[in-house]
Length: 236
Picture 1 (cartoon, helix red, strand yellow):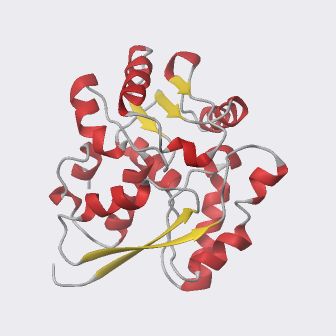
Picture 2 (cartoon, rainbow, N blue to C red):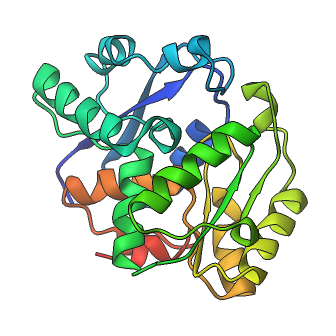
């Protein structure tokens, strides 16, 4: 591949996980570079202040610099919010856009998942809203296939250790999940996906990997060259 491909990613300001993980994921692909822009986010909640952090106008300002969103707010704000945001980004920049959640939903369709394991760091009400939104589109998430850690401060999410996440992934698989999503782009989980897939026998769709996969697909990149980051990259 001789064409230079530049991936632009918008990320919440308090996220410290996705940049190094994304650089590692694409490192085996020649002529692909990744560039980041940020917008202010300090915590995840359903309060007016918490929701205002994801106001479209704020994100569009960042998008006029770099037009891909690596974040999971559509999980609790509704998938249509990301669809509208991508339309607005493309209108403002002329560049195709995707998000972690829209990419996850594409992957769930490809893997024909009907029962999802949802592992997040979020508060009870945020988790319940995500479950409700997925249930509304026919994706089953039950008490047996969800786990959440009730983390208040977004910067604390990146401090969650591998063994904690591995335990939660195992629990939702035991609960009957056909696939698992580690659903927060500030979770340091992507590097463990292949190990968990081998251990538990189901696809593990981390939201850092989903958006990277979808961006590369949109740019015409063969993602099969990416090894060690999960089954998703072996899907067309």
